[in-house]
Image (cartoon, rainbow, N blue to C red):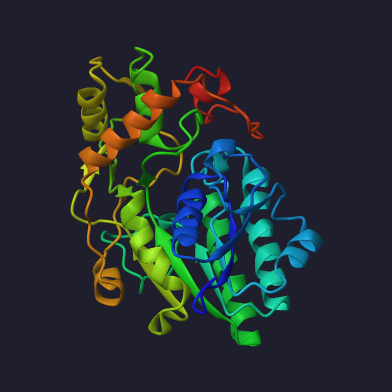
Amino acid sequence: MSSNSKTIFVTGVAGFLGSHLSEKLVSLGHKVIGIDNMLGGYDDNVPKNVEFHKIDCCDHDKIKSLMKGVDVVYHCAATAHEGLSVFSPFEITKNNYLASVSIFSAAVNEKVKRIIFCSSMARYGGQQTPFTEEMKPSPVDPYAISKVAAEEVLKNLCELNDIEYVIAVPHNIIGPRQRYDDPFRNVVSIMLNRMMQKKAPIIYGDGEQKRCFSYIDDCLSCLIPMMDQKNLNREVINIGPDEEFVTVNQVAEICSNVSGFNAEPIHKKDRPQEVKHALCSADKARRLLNYKTTTSLRDGIIETYEYIKKRGTKEFDYNINLEIINDLTPETWKKKEI
């Protein structure tokens, strides 16, 4: 390794974001130690030349031993199921909040230089768009609450122990390696996986919910400099575009066009606590990180489609159990009919 290279610890290395991030870090000459419990990742996502350990973030003693000599921690691992958290709050909270505290505690104990925590735009709740970093977090579901709680622990531990930190807020990332057989999250991948099996897309509510989607490479362009750029310490920074603010209906239309399968969407009743409009301002990222969107939503969906086409479609894997089953629980989840 060069004199400028670092030893970097990445959680969720077999997942979508963690695998791409680790691959980029290795290409830049850094040593990467990666962990994953494989709940939401694929084996072939783990990049070559990464020191991989199949362990859970909550395995605290093992985490501490692996962090010896680490310079920077990227905490990407999450059970990022915002909608599901309403019906499986224990599992989601354990895998987000407790897992995060375990990682932060180990990192502080081993005196790492900086921790980058990938939080979520869910922190903003249903506030007026566009969401800016100055807004007070206002989470509306257990997933968002777990993320905001983890942020608070991170700030508390790092400020007390003089450890640098950055809170990154990526949103709705799409692209190759994203898990597409998860029935609870990743709307673009779910739609494409269904359409490529000649099944109509499922939309909750009227489909007029609005979102922005970020292509993975555009996200990495901000995450990489967060490891050592001095003016980012203790900052919260939204990552992702704010130019293409589209409805779920429009997303379905693009997916249909890209996949070549045309069918009227199947509309189901609204999911409880779903935020209708979610848009993050990218102004701070532009100012501090020279952020620029380079991949359009359509091009990102095309890349995702090509990835699924190459790997082959999959049946959906209901690998997280519903803890609360009642009249509010989506029928598609209770009956496993996605």
